[in-house]
Figure 1 (tube, rainbow, N blue to C red):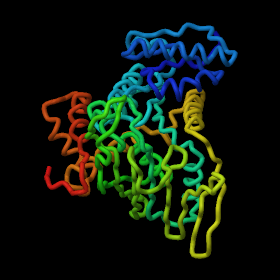
Figure 2 (tube, rainbow, N blue to C red):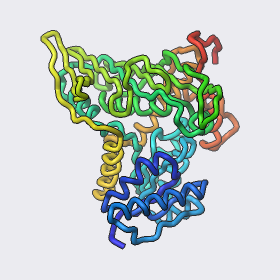
Figure 3 (cartoon, one colour):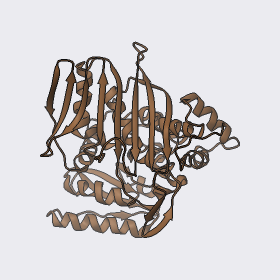
Figure 4 (cartoon, rainbow, N blue to C red):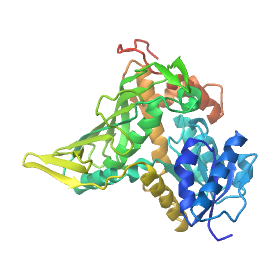
Length: 413
């Protein structure tokens, strides 16, 4: 077998088989050598897909692919583990891999709760392995262009960012609709993307201080899920805002986010590669713009006029999935713990922000700080020393925050 990076997968569902697996087939420097899933049939299916796709590309598999009986068995066989489970187990398997000093990249979000995310941070501090949160959206050219526009100073001091992400659809695995498994609905799914992308644009040196829900609701409660019509109670539409402080100047910027599985409010197209994005600064604004021929631009405006900056258009997230994996492999090759864009602290704070927005909704949409979240969590999870048990309790409480009407909550927590 040729010398390559040995890849192991934990969780062989949709995101792995449709998004990551084809990239491992394509790349010469990787070999998929082990798969673990609690559903052994899913693992066998992924193995067969990998073999078939490799053969179709004229790259017959010349090594054994082990369908493992446990995560521990897999970790002994691989250089890198790709965690693609339900959100409930993202942090669990990430921390386990780091404890075994195995490089790990996990699907977003990092965890359901900040408590579980902190367990990954703690494990990373003691590990020699590299961690990466696979939030692929920052590799979409639009976001990189916007970051460079902000860093150039063209817009002056950033005042606010508005970012909307989502898809009006019920076509998700059943676990997405269960707060215990997912920690939340659209706010976890697309809200995590929106927070990480907007923070990337603003600059990870900016410090999130407080969060306020504008409305987290179940906008379309009657849905057909896996062919069955049912009522859902998890959020499918989340609007919230975050204040970031510049530690150098004490100035602040506000980020407004919409994350939805329902009919969007901000824009007609909030897809992976066309999500609405607007930035306003003291000298001007920038907004993503598509012309009638689907050419993509950034429109920059100020009191003296407007101009369009062309942006590379990509048809789907296949572009950014490949980019994030190549980035991770490059970090491993260079043996670097450079954490500029994928610091575990940044990934964990992203979850804290989501949990703060959920708590804000529970508190009648009052502003919540990260300290408020810690106090609430400590009171809720008294009597448990396990971050995973605490995570279960907190996930159910916060993941059930959605309202079914436009009225504000009156309860005081």
